[in-house]
Length: 408
Ligand code: CTP
Image (cartoon, rainbow, N blue to C red; front, side):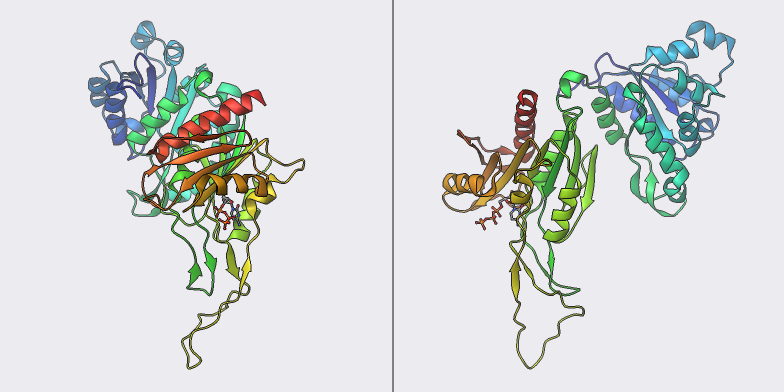
């Protein structure tokens, strides 16, 4: 990415009323540093938290505050302002602003501008956790996201954590750097989004097969490669469901994540995510689970260690790849091997019925590391990719997927 990803892009920033409004000042700085131009619109409630002078100084432009100001309307009217922008960003987006936008209300400068704009809108919600979790807010946000075409609003955050009011949970406005990423993402054109309208299901991470309430069988998969693939597919415009075993990773932007533990749960969630155009099953699924999970903690005793009786887990990949009306057009599996990588990957390709296998040699430094060396094995060819970061592998794979689906 260049240093000026927003070069010559115009952002209209609507600053609503909330303690997070101070972060809007940092956001202005980041947008300008990324090459963008910002004009700000401050609501009366927003002006209780930041001053018009701060915003004017940082944006380098006068700040609009009310609907009926003859001076403002002669320089740049509010309708013109809403059209001037390439993107309208609302940060913080309060429950009130969200409710007005979701219902087409236009009774002040911010809501009128949101209704009058012909550009996309990105919301960075910020509110008390109870408010955010209220079904009314949830319904309004879903409604805004679901409006047709460019009227569908993009949403970044809110984050989880401690809030200014002392409560914990989701509601804190996304950090300015994350909002900047979302701005760059939302401004990308159709050529940058070749997977728009396509759906993917990705599995990632280890599975955790419970033995008793406190113990389980698992493995050393970090989930990094699978998460990177989910992020890379979403960045190309794909609608991604990520079915994840236990990991310490953050959910990539624009990805719907479903947390699971055992293989059976992962299988059910993966199948429930169908139909999909592509399935990328990168999870390190445990081959076995105990046949009966103990209801209470297994205690040490005079009889010595317990004997665990294991049964085989279902093969999620083979199930998804089996012929049928719900089979995705492209099914991709992974082969983690310590010896004979190509031969093992190729035999997995036919045994599991998938279209491509990404083979990786796990004898070296792979688990938890940021780099990886892979082979891409398809029915007709084997390609050896140079060692590169997991993010680069993910991007290359996502582009290959886009290319394949465009020809399918
Ligand atoms: N896989 C799966 N369900 C399983 C086991 C594996 O979906 N129960 C998928 C993995 O997500 C991966 C591929 O199958 O995409 C290969 O996984 P791997 O563990 O390498 O293969 P195994 O089937 O376990 O084969 P083996 O034990 O022979 O290495």
